[in-house]
Length: 172
Image (cartoon, rainbow, N blue to C red; front, side, top):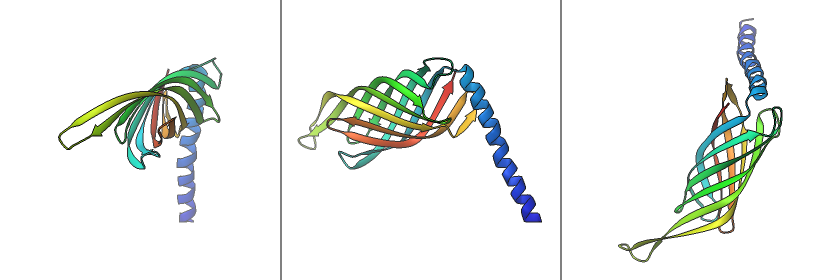
């Protein structure tokens, strides 16, 4: 009987906050059309087979009060085998209640370090068309703030990488 009570208490502790979170999310989406979000995490470069870090900042505004579509823009900074900076504009679609996907075409600016000797360091810059995809799951909701896991993928002609990390956003 004691185990049964413990299981019931755990069940209530898990279900009740989820119910409050869903109600808050439904209320929030009725009145919030703007989102400012930040993602950060571990980044893997497929072209260089190395790990690094990255961060992504975006702004989206829904097309209407109850629309699942949003327009916006974002910037990304990646630190892996040199660094690059990406800027883009695109769309986001709310696939399910807490899951969204964004596609942002844009331009990536690369900085490559070239070393001819140990004492000589030169760098070169280049820019390429890029596609940035992000998949975000809103695991937690607190009033106008939400947070959860994120998976980003960025593609250019000469480079592609994926980032797994945490996404946090403020809606207003």
